Length: 174
View 1 (tube, rainbow, N blue to C red):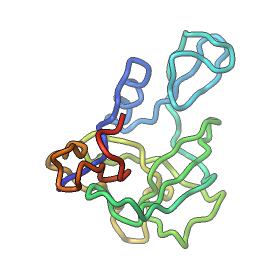
View 2 (tube, rainbow, N blue to C red):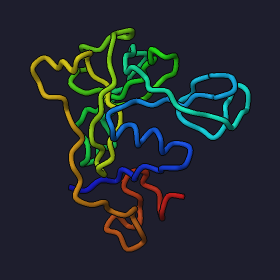
View 3 (cartoon, rainbow, N blue to C red):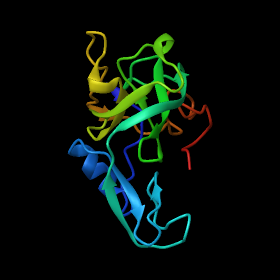
């Protein structure tokens, strides 16, 4: 199976997040000076501009703030339609993640969800939203498909006439 999904970019500012996800924990960055929580992770606090930070483990309890249903462009690494949600974590920050085991017509803004974890097409582990307790109405939680290898972006000798698969633009995306 091929995927155009890029590999995760891991930096010194977000490595803790991905390491915690591999352990099945949701870690949120916290400013040491003003105690503000922030996600996504960054080098400095947006409230007080401090570069001093640590992390807290989040409960994983959350409520659905918004969601979108993605139909196109489709990638072999995912099941479609792909439902992606924006949730308000109990701790006060927000998180964007795929929603698993819940059909689109069952979703309601404000519904209670929890954060679980699933393997990404390249083998990394990322947060995934689901019903509390992992309930899926006796259906297994949908996982991302495993990927054998990645395909590079389209080049001038590609069978699409040098056009990028997802954007349709010529050459490599910058």
